[in-house]
Image 1 (tube, rainbow, N blue to C red):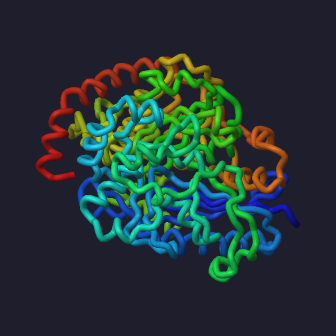
Image 2 (cartoon, helix red, strand yellow):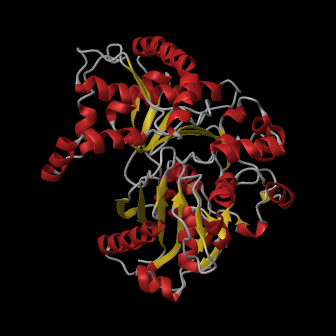
Image 3 (cartoon, rainbow, N blue to C red):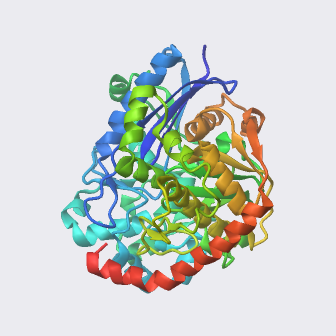
Length: 517
């Protein structure tokens, strides 16, 4: 069998890989978690060498499962969660821990850059907000606080850019990822403004060359082949941001397509081709990304809650010892065991509300100081109530962004397609369907972002004619209509949820000053 395509996606909590045939069949799939390091409140890091070791493990596993030689692989595509940053020396070796998208250490650098350039310049250029802590402000933090690390840095890469460099010895960033460097990236031209980089004190040489998502940027070197088990010479394409990858796998290739991932973050996006949206005040409350299919004129408007599926991982790891042990003994997912306890709890969790801002919040609040709040806890609440309230809290956060996104009048096509992560939970899908009040469906099968990466690789190397195959291959199942009574009840609870943030917003900043993160 030839024409096999490999996709690997690096999230905040782990990495996934799949092998796909040129007919869209997933031949093998594998996942590995890696540790999230929080050495200081407000920081969020990874050991970057874990990315490489996990890459080697995943490739070995899926080749074994598929029973095919790596010489049959025609192309490789990568993606990652963003913003993320791996600072490397000239040999491509890390010089510091990797910074992931939950990190909020660079608060002073955000304010300094804002005062230096002004919000208008930044937003007109990037169509994004600096409060998202793009890589350039994180670079400034290292320049100010770790000058030895900054001086040793040759390139600031994304996670997938780091793995691409290990595989091919090429330093590059694709256009959908470059927007997460922020500040100096022109979303319309697809290039970095060197004059802006120099104004903020970042040498342009630290930024890798920009490529299109489908560009072949290099081939697997002999050294990388020896470590990974891949055949030398396999071409690697430029890659894409992880949400784009997941949505490509889900068949989202046309304006109006709308999908939702519940990985570490909760990420809801709409594909569009509106240049006006990029400068609309409500559009600037979202994350705006060049879309993989045509990054020069197509974009995804993305609503992001910082800790989406991560809320369940936190509950599992902190309070789910019984469920983890049961999973070890029976093979039943600890996540399924947790969410099943919330199934029969009344919508609204009998007056229990959770604000899931465990690492600050992105759209539309853009508040790095925000933290989690459990409100209304009473002696009659059970474990199931608490679990459901956490899931509902993520749904409220998504609704807040979704309602803001819809105010701009972007055309959307129903159903909203649940794609990955926590979206596999039937309980959570029902909650989100009822809170948002829109029809939903689930993408059938495994794959998600790494499948989208494999499709990208296929288009880039010419195995696939275009992205149209993604829509042909995607199968949407478990269609769900919102229950009007539940939606009305949730809107009453959402009003309390929304007012609760207003009531405690100042206290978040007070708390931040006390704990320093």
